[in-house]
Image (tube, rainbow, N blue to C red; front, side):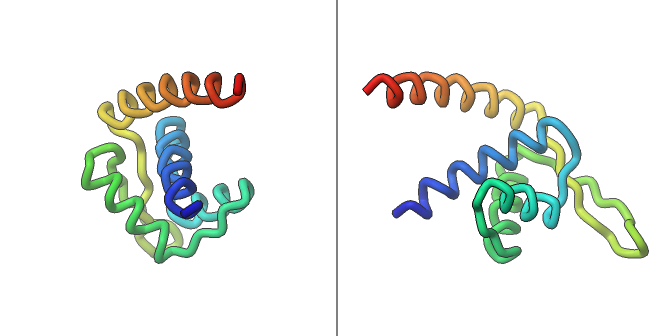
Length: 99
């Protein structure tokens, strides 16, 4: 049950970082790990593909040390969605904290 909640937090966290800078898979695994989320590539990449399919992030392939690495950046739709999420999060946090 907690897994479903955490997957939502992870999606928001990814979108947050992709709105600020180009991000890539291994960096996201490490960043999320700093927040206590233990993610495998088998969990992360389907999330990234879904965010890409929903046009919330866009891939930017770059060659790094002879290998192609896919970087991601939030799209305009992703930025609008993140803004809406922040509003709802603030409202929810205020309500939960007051109980």
